[in-house]
Image (tube, rainbow, N blue to C red):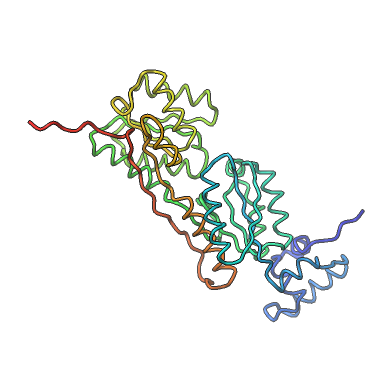
Length: 340
């Protein structure tokens, strides 16, 4: 059975944008008469018929937002989604949530569905596999369809869209500098996301803070056993005084390995990591962590998208940075100085 030709396919044949084809078919004054004639001739030749659902939604908003979540096992994204939902409800919008499970192929499938025209805008945290492959055409296709897109959390990508997240480089720069000011020099970093944009930025901040005259202690691997070996080396051979965990897995693995090897926290080892605040305070000892304000990220990302959809903001694309802070618990306590 022969499938109908799509706007995207017409655009490719004519070597123009999807937006140009759509406007030409609707006799937009923005398009030259010659281009309108070319587009309509090719559309007639291929018996193009517009998607009635898409046409209807072009004339009136659907009231629906598409949200791509990379990983539901990570409670961070649940809190981000909560912020999005809260802001969307105030606007009377509905969310359709898709989970990529960090898969490039699944993300592509979702992107193709979203270009069908039944959402007013899209919020995306790019999948881990997509970042590794550096293949972003499916996301760029959504943008080409004139669907407003906002990247959230994972935002270090060269795309003409609004972005909302934290300054990952600055987070670990400040944390490293703070530990140095307390007199620590052997500071390490553990990470299972070194290949991702956020992970790279956190490593950059750590390296920048230490400077060229200090030794870098880096335990990095996406494979648990390999990461475990590298962290053990950092703890037992290098005898680092502090570890920055750039993600939940590396933070908790460092914490566990210190316990198993009788390394006392905070007496022998200080730890700062990316974990849930609600969990961090109930550990023994309690764990210092980076508060990323996930609810605020979600709420702000939705706000930015709503403003684009309603054309309240027609200016240049924005990059909005949400403030973060290190919440210090027992794992970064220093002994009180005794008065002489």
